[in-house]
Length: 272
Image (cartoon, one colour):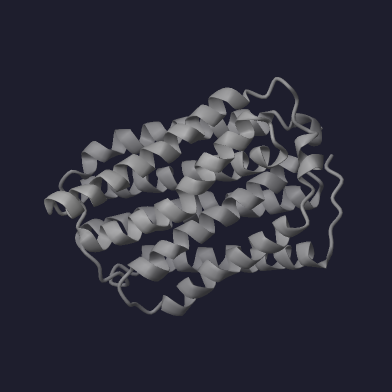
């Protein structure tokens, strides 16, 4: 079991997480049950629907179960809790800054700021050395780090290449300038730095490498599952090119899950 030195900040983070889980469920149900809520392009509507579905059926239950386990002293639960808070920050940044104005605008603002505060409070007094002590030498940090490096580098190359094409050749990004600005901005700030720094730290078995690895791998796998679902919904609705994206995002989801499980399995001693 994990010896948790829970202070007032940590308890506030737990309370904020319960509120977050409830609001995530409300927002997802509203999106699924109100077809007219989203006023975006058809491909974006399909993406929102897939997102709401995965968030309601996967992200919210995972967040709740992880918090319950964390309160019981499970290190795995603690790390998954952090990962799902990270997912919520990244996910609702898209809703807040990317969705056309709708009735849930203020809810999106709350869903973005709540996990930011909860994550800051939860990680603020975390003893990284104590966490790392629960990971054994057999934890496959090298291939997990390689996956993280590949993911971070791949995102960097993909977005930088499209930006360079627009700057030097006047070629508009495939997804359009507006969508590119939003998605590339969030990936290059919320994903790339943490994947790359986390990969370097985990390779060296630095204490924060284990924490960042757990957060980024599970957060990334959950969001590629969102992209898989959104692409599948788009394919059903006849969105051009959506069907071809399903196996790509599906495969990357499986790799991300494998990396997450392999890393969390290394913390087995903390939960037995």
